[in-house]
Image (cartoon, rainbow, N blue to C red; front, side, top):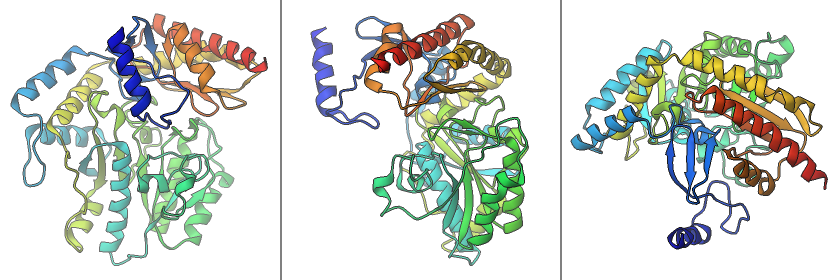
Length: 432
């Protein structure tokens, strides 16, 4: 226990955690092991993980086949530079990605994280138009309440108000933002829903691409919108000769009920970003896929190469993790698992609709969202969840879960029952 206290003092005094201050009053909980859907803390307490470690651990923790695959790869090589060299895991992963992503996506660029994958997508679009003799096309149309990452390029297409990056406004490229779709998932879109995008495309002649999170906006607000919007957006982009980028980092690999969220609309973007669940949560890896039209145009233009190249690009261990995770997903009855998650989340979170502090409950695939009327106080609600034996980390007004796909009905019931109870208790405490 003394060693644990010593380490936690280091954590408290010297480690910055995501979106936190060193002087933050928010506690960090010391995890010493993880197995299946449970995290074990240093004090011995176990928590059911409702977050899939920010949506990526879809097969659960300590997965035997994932472990074995990485151990085998480790004996061959942990890393080799990708400049001028290649290796089997990268080639096999590319073959697999091209087989499962929609045609005509047929070129893959690997990077280290989702934010970088988005930056790569933006650079691809800009370099594409540069190669076509239209270098003025350097801006992007993005949806309000969208979130695409924390690097400078990705930040520039995040919502400028809710995107948490307003202080950097003077150094970010100035993009064009339009209202998020209000047509809900399962509904058709009206002309009024599409009007902001149509107007922006008609008004601005310097647009390189439109970027959006298909069907489900993630960290910008957990909003689920109509697949018909994607269909209409694709049509408008084609009419105006603008590229379309889909950020599938949060939605890819089954989370919304389709392998990729764009499949809800049978629409293919010109560029697609994937990450998070790509490696089953084992290692950081992302990819940006594009069409032959985009890749060949860049290759045949000046300077004749795509201008990006991460040091750890296509790391062999990460590629092995991704290959194994995709195989596990495809060999499982993942559609049934997502349907089971959705049914459990819909039934389990329904009582929240009766709570006075709740604005709305939304469920899509393996995503369950309880939107409160006021922002949550993290110092109060997170300890309540931990005390109750679950790991849930809300943000803003949203208390949400994205459980691992393997979570049993019993654990799902415990997770949702705890959510309802904690939100109810939190509401009572907030009134005190």
